[in-house]
Image 1 (cartoon, rainbow, N blue to C red):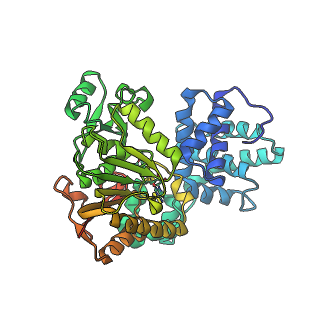
Image 2 (cartoon, rainbow, N blue to C red):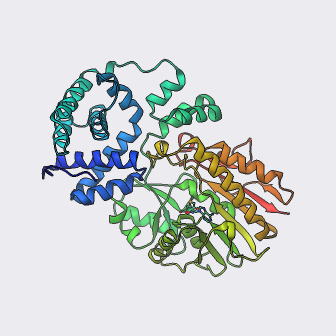
Length: 450
Ligand SMILES: C[S@@+](CC[C@H](N)C(=O)[O-])C[C@H]1O[C@@H](n2cnc3c(N)ncnc32)[C@H](O)[C@@H]1O
């Protein structure tokens, strides 16, 4: 973090300093948004009550980054940013002007005061002031590019390679996806059905005055409309619900876990789906194993189960490519694959700036190796479910084609519990899409071992 000349105790300025520092940490050090904002906020001593504001401000900057740069760099005489701090400050100031929640003069003044707390030259402070004033006067009149790809990339602030990829995969529908990626997603929870029937919890919510909507696809989900943070939501502390998008029920429904079966989840941490599988097993997790390469993230699975108050599965911290399992041991394996996460941009706007086409290629290769490693561990007639939270065909269809070439696997249709509107007719797999289903983007397919 930067050294500041003085840290003001005025909270409007402090929150802008926090936003500027966070934007720098996310873009330069590739930190996840939540982690960056919390660690900067803690170091600067931003009051807890102000943190949601900072988080929204930073998310807003990331969702509008290309648009902001497009406007700002037309207003900076040199056509480039003099430094990372000034770039971040102009983006934070510019976003507040576009957002329009506070008057333009307040957006300009608080940003200029925030910049003063960094050790920058007075000329740079003057530049921020002049550019933001100009921004407020002129941003509505600046014409967007004529070229279609560049227009979409600037308007919806996605990198060009991603726009190109979405256009290739979705045609004209790509614009709706780009738009949905910038919208605020529902605040969805999954009921811990091993401890409370979903309907009872819904009734409790009603009686306690919480506003909510039942899930659109699976009965154990609901989205909370009341403005309460998960930490202050009593069913969360009691382990009766978990935060999870409804899309991620799909692979668990595909798996149809039942208590006597030997089940393995690969890529299990931090344990979102592991919890759901254990809930479906009614807590009978004796034959269930959850494996992840990251020991620290395996620790989070353990914490998750102590909150859910369910007996945990066998947790294995290991690289699945060197997995310590006997051959033909499992009835069912779920691979929740490491992926480019391009389906969850609406919840993690920084992902679009952190990924590259090379990541997609690298992950597509790793996913095929994970599938190949799973096949020998399955019993004859055993089931392999493969899932990602990405929308990159190179990963999803790459694995589907790879598995179809295997003489040992045969693709299975989705079970009847999966709503037909989630099934992709071209592949027979499930593809959830933010703009079509108001779900996070995900892909799931299943195979049987011959
Ligand atoms: C999509 S995330 C899992 C999300 C999790 N299943 C959930 O629902 O909360 C993929 C996981 O795969 C793990 N992973 C990556 N490479 C692996 C490998 N070679 N062996 C085992 N796990 C791996 C990562 O550590 C990461 O936790």
